[in-house]
Image 1 (cartoon, rainbow, N blue to C red):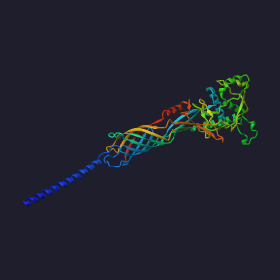
Image 2 (image 1 turned 30 degrees about the vertical axis):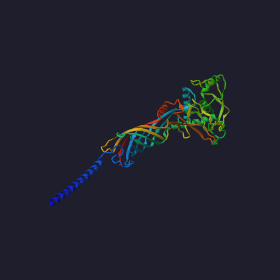
Image 3 (image 1 turned 180 degrees about the horizontal axis):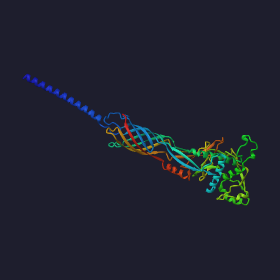
Length: 451
């Protein structure tokens, strides 16, 4: 019996040990299988969910390339919490070229027929003098440039539908969107404009068209090219005063103190829709004389609008002297409805710039789908609004006069807000920009999990 009891106890102990070993082996096998299964388990959303004790901040990193209405770019993304991720990147818009054109005009307020006739005669003279015949159109072109750094936060608001996200953040980039200038072809034209205006200013200032003394020739006052001199004044005289006065001129009367356009040749851009106020004292850059106009027997020859072209101008006394104040600070420089006219700068260039705020808030939404079985490669579509901070500005620089030191005082006229009656081609671009106080940002994004 004793032997039987020992054998029974030994057998029970052996069975217990065997069961314990089997349990441990099974437990270990189950644990290993569970670990392997978790390794193979696909990740959900943009973060790892299998370990609730995991640190959520930047526990993996995605790299993405993107393209859309704002251009092409890239970003990197990492999780911030279980419900949000941070995206940082950049975006560049490939250059898109825009074209516009403006007409050149002689003086101001001329009828279409008189404008054509004056311009042709002026072109004849300038071609003889310079070898270059002016064209009546100034062509311009500019490239659209949008380069932005972006910082965005994607929020996943739906716990059981993590493909959808809402995005907030900002873009920060260049403020100059477009810088347009005249073409190389038109630069020759604008060079002639500056040359003609220089001669015109000398005529209005009652100066010799050529400063002979400066080149060592005596008696310069005797060589005035008076026929050209009077022609320049004729073309620059404001025709709005001419018709009634000319009726009297036919009887031999003399017209006193005609008003002359500020520029002999200029680019009319539109009309001001509000008064332009001087922000500082502005001075006269050149002398200007009072004139009497005497008509001879041939003064009855005229253009189809009734304006005459062979008057004789006699200077009497100064109307304005160089260095005198033209506008005090706070004075109205141009009234609402006045034409806005542009002339080339010292480099024979005309420039337009379109600008917007550098800092641009963004809000949008998107949807993401995996395109591989392991969900490490994903495709997303985002759509949102980029806030410019109001309508962009399109600025045209125009000269108002000179300061006390003789430096040119410029004013940047915003064609979007300050001008009306723009040329048709320019009005088209202005209207397009006016309709976009916000920019629609639509982006297709392809991302790859790096680690």
